[in-house]
Image (cartoon, rainbow, N blue to C red; front, top):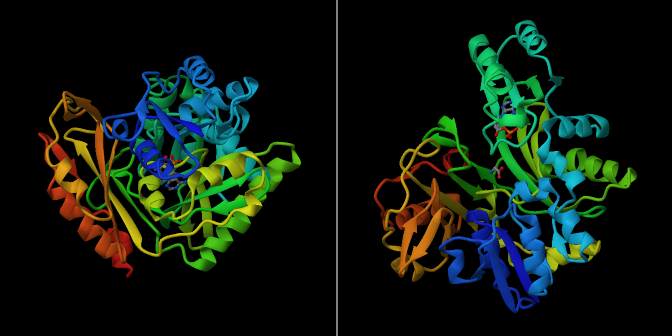
Length: 424
Ligand code: AMP
Ligand code: GLY
């Protein structure tokens, strides 16, 4: 088969790395890809949101399967367009991508299908929103309705912060049209974890648990980022909690949608808070997580393409995923200044040497190859990933590799995995 992966981050590098190992795959393309992906797939210079360009490419090259990494093309309807053209594609339709594309849509679904989530209210009016916050008190959570690259959620500890959050979204329009409506919700307490499941619209097969670290500084301090590291499995997800998550959250949502003739095909990602009253949904995403994928995929022993094909063909009930029992941990190396301003174009050293190490994978995000050199090309640059007998060993191995990589302005968190290790 010929496979096209859409996207350019660490998640896509991990997917491409895994897909390249599939016996079913003869030729692999990635659009637009990055420096690391270029080593294992043919890079195609088409932007991830250029849906018509991607359709033309897939038809022209007779691509058998397109795998969509990021949310933006899904929310824009890439799956519907590919399907119209008779092209096979892995991911949910535009309508169901609203589970990620609109927090209002997602919250209403959860309410309708009884999936536990924070109490909430939707606002389109500034004064009403402010009044509600005064009435509810703090802490409280303010969310822009639409996509905001993970930045449209503000957990406000004071009334001033909450009011400022509303103004940033609704008046200053920091997230553009995404902020036309907002969700204000109850602040939940507990430990976070990510559960990703394959769904063919009927059968659900969970991937193993994971946890990411969203904040920029050690100790989960500072602003939110796209993710500074992740590990899998997440020890807080015991077998009992895992079962509860599937039965009380994913089952009702997938079944509820199916009853309305909406079949979710692809990966459904639940960002969860494990509260003292049980697991609750913070958000749904309609794709693989980044950087969770970098920590999950190296543990998957079975063929990812077979699993994706089974989702598309509604025969997920025939599939069983085998997992490496070892733990996996991925540390993001970023450019100094990220998630705000940072510089690009710095030469990266040490990558060749790391290739020789066993069970260490360096997934590239913001990198580019120029005249045989790798240069930084984004905020998050690399995901240095290691397997180990447990999280502690995976962490030690990953950090030893991190130390061998260098570039001007290299920044990383030094405590990825600390919560899991504390509880060991
Ligand atoms: P989201 O993009 O909705 O997952 O939110 C980003 C982050 O904000 C989450 O990973 C949580 O850390 C935090 N968050 C979101 N909703 C809530 C909530 N209701 N209570 C507490 N924290 C939340
Ligand atoms: N790790 C968060 C996300 O993929 O949205």
